[in-house]
Length: 338
Image (cartoon, rainbow, N blue to C red; front, side, top):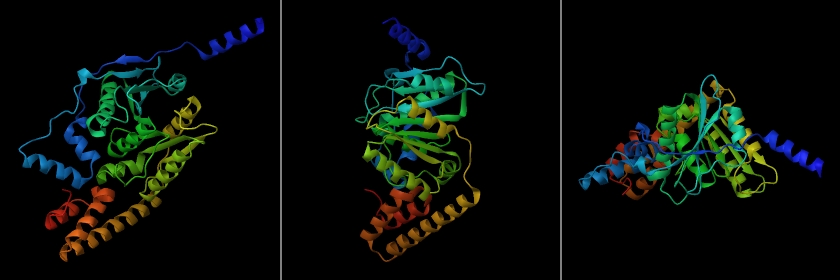
């Protein structure tokens, strides 16, 4: 009995004190999270243009902000000690409206000097552009204004449906986010909703973004989705992805060990091979031009239905890489999104 007591005490002491995350409010608005910025970055080009024209036709304009931050609450965990170059930051998106610091994560966050922040009321039932994306962006902005943050270690992550939103944000905001931690949820890129961003932003994704996939080995659907998503990264010249599976785990949030593996991937230094990247970009550019030429021929032939399908297919995959030619073709045949 005495031996068991001593063992239990030793375990508690080794684990260290329990550290609670804080319930926080923020008040500063990010220029990256306005309605206009969200539409431009998260929607395909023709869909964004159709939305703007629809508003204008009805004499309306976008409101500046999608949120009233005074009504929002966030879970915040800050390690006691920051690294010399500043804290890292993990903006986490939950699949439920309740956002908590997952069990065991504090010690890993401490090890990496990483702040954790997650918005409440940002679950799968909430609108991505109206709430989930801007809440994550506002969280990042406010933490950056409050603490010394190392810009090279700002990441977005999520679990299940939250992970899919994290991937969208990593693609759309590589000037803010250096990578994504995708826990048991992913999609192929260049397929809605994970549309490609404008060329300058996508070049940032290709040259410096890292994507860490983690899923339970028994969560076969998530593992298969990770394989497909990782393959699509290479297809579009994004070579900074890697995946890990957790033996014996199902569809459950990553444990501390899996989080540590993901952060190791995200913080690992390295850049893509320059010749490989150049060759891949040349192939993608050639493909975009071929598809534009095919759509142009359909528009010239007056085949409006086939032209519309070709343009919408382009828009939903490589639309941002095909601008402004794509928009001009849609205007010529008046066959863009309704």
